[in-house]
Length: 208
Image (cartoon, rainbow, N blue to C red):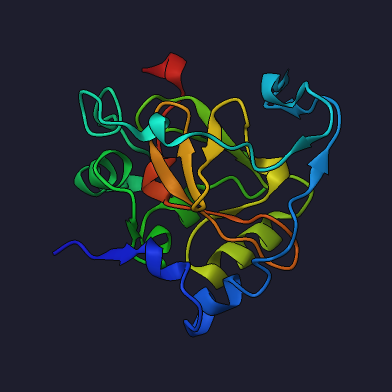
């Protein structure tokens, strides 16, 4: 039986353990970034405007019903790290509040296969576009330590590809085509995007 975590509960005060710690800095203001930023070897279109406030927000319309839930198509079959197809399709396309269970990503092949010597790019499990690259501005050990502490892969502003990632007013983190990714749960260090591994386990678009 597949277990799901109600991500809406993460937003409630008074939770214990790692979830509560993740909320400790929820009032921290978002960082500002000026100018353009290089991402994955190219300039991010979304960051060409100076002094862009992060996260970049979207309207609820992005998550409107389409031909396959909130997306135009199912998740791809060849997901990385042995991520479960049914779990991925449900979370990405037919879900707004639930997440893979805390620590799910550590039960996959991710920790065995991830590059420990350089950044890894994480692709949308539906469309194959690049959504995150990590680590950026920190070590792989720091990235993994933070992710393990909170239960989900956790990204910072500079690790997000703002060409394809948006947030809604309730903190939900989504792709520009309607894939549910996770939630932004700021802490004392700024925005922290807690993302389902099954949502970013796609192969690059050109490889499909």
